[in-house]
Length: 93
Image (cartoon, rainbow, N blue to C red; front, side, top):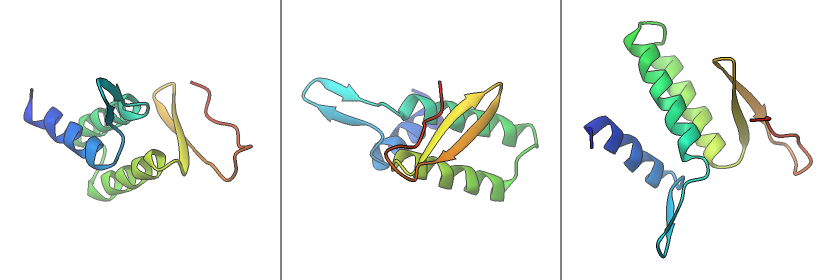
């Protein structure tokens, strides 16, 4: 496993995005988060994102993992919606 992939996996475990129940791995939001992290890395390498934007992206991902925000991709753009109540519409995947 690449070192960067292991770091992402470890971070997802630390954030509670991956859990294990007997022989079942539960990773409901992990795949989406991984796609955003990889996209962010590409943006940094391409010079279109800087440290403050990465910090903001990670803050948003943590809120998503804690159930405070809903995120979805829409034509290469990450859409963010705050979840204010159980009645809030979620992003359509």
